[in-house]
Length: 408
Image (cartoon, rainbow, N blue to C red; front, side, top):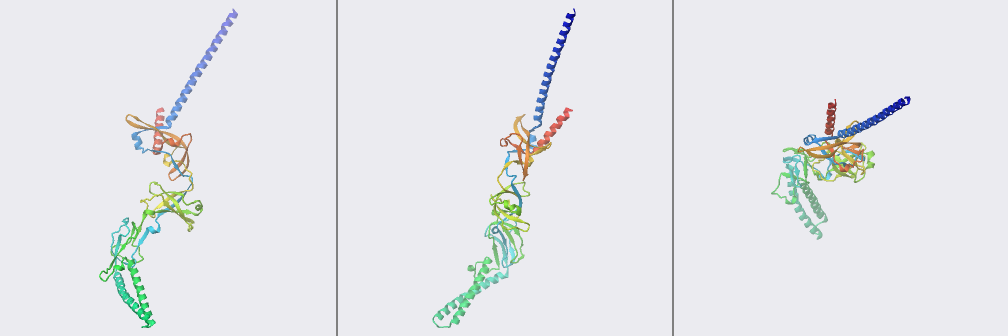
């Protein structure tokens, strides 16, 4: 009887042990299943945190712009300042060579001028006197020329003395010089001496433009007297403007003829223009700088002499992946860009999908920043948000806050 009781007791212990083992297995299976479910949910939630969707209306309001990554020379440039300038032959100051009163002019600053166009009409009594003197001396020259030839023949025939012949020759040459001088003065006034006669004397003269270009300065008005040293007008031909750069002594050794120059105007929304170094000055100025002359790749009628410019001289040709600085946003101490993942139509409206991707930010210059990617993304195969990235970041954070509020 005792043996039977012990046998039943052992069977009970075995059954209890088996139940405990099965319970542990079942509990472990449930636990693993729950962990897998939690991990899967967390992964989906993480993906949702990096993706933002915009309706077509939101896309337009945010001013989103997308574009490809660009190749920029950012890390090997020399930043300098300078001005736009015209070569001496393209910048002309107009004055009244012999002085005079302004009778008429139609010039205004900015007006386009053609070579040979009348700029101003001047008058002065001296103009008439100059014409009178020329005609008077020209008449005397004709007489003295005849007298010289007559005395020369007499001298050759030993009819008169050499002294008389030499006097006639001297008088003739002296008058010839005076006539030539007056002829040149008339030419300065724009008067053709060969067409001048006693019947067409004029107290007025016209001054003509020597070049094509634009009026850059007007310093006279009708009735004003202009001295020979006064600049009445300035005319500039803007077809061959160049960039005159200021480079400090320590950086001159880095320069070479032909190096590319990218420059912008201070208030031109970052519009970039291209030039190349043509000449490097050989004189160091008082501020220890050297003038560097750069020619533009193409003419630009928007540029004017004297405009200030900010320039980057490319020291070498190493280029890097770069995006506009406003394409990069910062969150939790890291840098991100937004990639356009796709677009689709929902309820007859376009919906845009963007994903936030972490990047390593490098050097920043001239509105662009170098970037590299943490993963193996090929940047040439995707489009990035180049404008409006901060709007996407704000929407993403607002969405997270809304979801957090509902969770409470």
